Image (cartoon, rainbow, N blue to C red):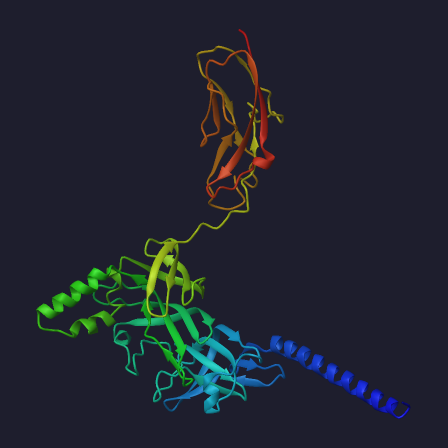
Length: 406
């Protein structure tokens, strides 16, 4: 037994050391992932800094020219425990960050940062590599580049091997039927194939049109002998954007939707109102008005009739019962800095308990009209309501109306 004691002690120490090392590794991994970041350096441009403090400048060699990411629009830092990218098979490495930003030439671009300080632009095919977000279709340059459209990106959403980028196209000078200064919401879908290559779709208008339009266009082109020309016209989405039934003129953000493969793009629609578009990688499913944000700022509360600006107390109203001539009580808002509501632009009206048949409230002016009341005493509560539905009912004004005989 005595001979076994040293062996048991050594075994226990080994187990303790192995347990501590395991906990320490997990702990450091968590903290390491959270410390990786993307920053902008005034001289270098955008820089990815890993958990060990190593810096990777986000720049790539494209078509013989050095392209630098100068300004960040949005980015996602991936954890060390993320599954290996398909492209790791090609010995590129593990994906560490996806960065959306503006290139040194002013165009929006997308870069993938891999472990080991490797930065790759989005790959459109095996032969072409570019970080630029344009209407690239199988390596062909876009038609719209010649029609005065410029592109801007505003946000991106990453979901597995898919990336959706929301942005807008702007035509500053105008062209033919397009007014100068026109903006149209667009989005790009980016996905990684089984070989690890990333592909960019052409920019798609965040809008939709009844399918009959496409059928009629195709039918018309066939009638005139241009059997395949309709496909070319169909690709000119930005040229024909005004023919869409609904579209966004500006995008603000994009996020992964609740249903698989769907994304929500928020922005402003063609009627100038906030809207949300539901899209997939391939098409726009629909556009709905954005639900009105809840108003957590109620209007200022009601104060009652003073009958004189020199009277500080609200009067206790007393009226003659049975009077066929209208009698009045006046409601006001306890304004602050001359405003009825903390939020500029909110419209404030008045509301009350259920009124008896001989009383009527003008909700816009706050005038209470009383006609033919019986001899009685009536207690009524009044409050204010704004056009978002927020109200001051918690600070309602309780008024006791007394009606006496003549």
